[in-house]
Length: 234
Ligand SMILES: O=C(O)c1cc(=O)[nH]c(=O)n1[C@@H]1O[C@H](COP(=O)(O)O)[C@@H](O)[C@H]1O
Image (cartoon, rainbow, N blue to C red; front, side):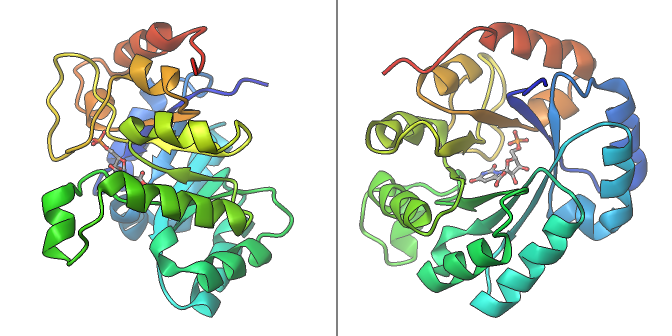
């Protein structure tokens, strides 16, 4: 069974654009991430359509609410048959445990967002947090692991120090990936695909560099080629 390491972020406002891009890409080379924008526009029917065409889906709705609400949402999301879902680690221990319990069958992977890659030290200070971003990521990742989650979302720059303290069976999903010479857009903590894999990332979330490319399939093939055979180097 193929285990593509690239997850393409389908950040689109409608189903039409999503289906058009899915038809151009290759299910053996990527998984698809459906986030808040596309899910709000197209809902579970689109998830089902993309799964029917063979894609595995990461439903990125980043749930963050009281434990009961999050646990119930996780259960419904998992019942769709998606490959992975996520919640915010900042929801706290009780919320993480409730979500884990709701997905006790462990078929859908349950991961936690640590700190968004769009936040830097200044943004954290604005909210009254004076710790270094990595210190917050480290604590949230350990909390997620203690609560039995399958992994975390973190920036690629944090993958390396996290891998030193967390074993390989804990999944690291890294967004903020930019091939060399590519626009960073609104991402503040970025890395190249090769660097992310070398530093211990398991899966790379890549959006605009693929979705805005004139030839998305070619870009996907090139990115897969760049990381082919690469492994974590401690
Ligand atoms: O959970 C995510 O996927 C996520 C977490 C995070 O900290 N930063 C982040 O960029 N993402 C998502 O990763 C994708 C990145 O897209 P691009 O910046 O276009 O590559 C977007 O869909 C974001 O919602």
